[in-house]
Length: 552
RNA sequence: GCGCCCAUAGCUCAAUUGGAUAGAGUGUUGGACUACGAAUCCAAAGGUUGCAGGUUCGAUUCCUGCUGGGCGCACCA
Image 1: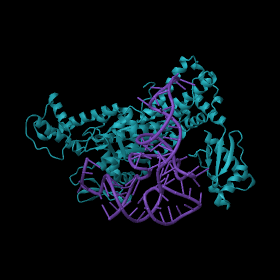
Image 2: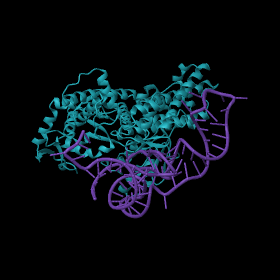
Image 3: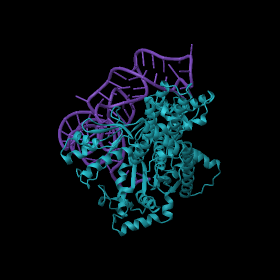
Image 4: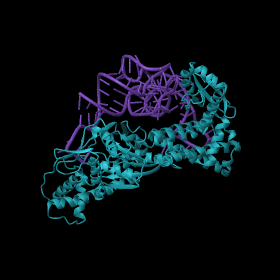
């Protein structure tokens, strides 16, 4: 990339001073090069002078001036200036940008993908909603973030596996069974007392009805009946969750069942390991984990006095198993209400002698659903939550995914149903998709006008001289940096903002300059630019899992 | 009481991980289609970045203390 060339220029200048003995050879510097957000400060700038200044007891501008004087930059830059309080600003030759664009064209958009992961194996675990009820909009946000992060990491050199952890062994499933059982009795005309701690949603009634409809044989004994209904209901719910996810465009590589940990004895084994290392101890007939030894947290129970193991116990075992499966990086995506759980999990990994830094937890803040400008209530227990399915039916997959990725995941999200539903200029999804379709339309028009589209690949890019054209080229090449930053910081929403900014530049350009004209050479050059632009838009939308329509 | 997250334009949010004059969208006002898609564009107005300190060449960003909001602090899941 061009940034590397700038780094080389700076390095060259430093070397010349090293040769003169002005800079000690052992002084290692990593020049920071960034693209200034304001126009007028060049294409790239470096703040290296600020770091050198205290070491040489000279002012940053003086250092900067010295460095610039020794720079050889004629092949890449028009000029290099000292500006502000000591910044060095690099003004690249337009030709250098065009050349870079041409290179990307020849090598393919994939050549813009940064290698952040270096082939490391990453396991992204997300959604992992208990199969006790349908996914609601909060799960939807987690699903979108997880899926898009996975796409992003795949493009940036990670070997990614997407996993859904199914809690099919705990007490919630038991409760689901009891809920279904009572609804089932109810459906047979019996009067039952339906407790508040049971699942209130209508879907439980549906499941009970399904049991009747399918003629499932219900055992006489209550306990057996509940047990049967628990597994029946969990399966039904899990299936509908998978269907919802599919409709949302989320496909998991793996559904990992909690029960499998017990079946394989991993939980037992893990607890034994902790006991052996004296990180677990017995108190009041329960088994406790010494969380306090590792983190600023209280000790937590692994096995309750009634002999039942907590989710914490199986969760430690689960994460141990993840690492044993050879993953270098574990990304967990949790609802922000689980934040208190992080120290526990890290302590657990620590106690097992694993690197706790291998675990990265992304917290997803709550979603407020707005309808007619007013918040819509949401509570699983009361059954009045808005399901992901309902939202998808209302606004469609593209809009839903895009909206979920319009915020940093750790910030509250207001999801405006009315806005997401609008097929108008107010809806940001269409702003991006429209650009893609518009470019396609320009190509159709060009073809109709007798332009030989086969010549686009060999267009003379030197004809792209407008300021808007240069800005578009720069924005296209910036894709590399966006992917890199997004992957490093696990912030997939950056792709969304980039796309909005990118297509904004395009729409502006479109209104200013005419692409298809009598000047065939110029037309071809502009089509070349738009072809590249369209590929980037398509690539970025693919990361978001949003369609790139050719007509709309 | 302890801990985590958030606070930026009227509203919804960005800000290249500590950089230069804090930016978009929306809303308001005014403008642009008998040439490639007006689901678009152009312009104006809009700010003590919650408050008070600190760290330094430089703070929306890091530290401390407040204020206000969300969440968590069980042998719950």
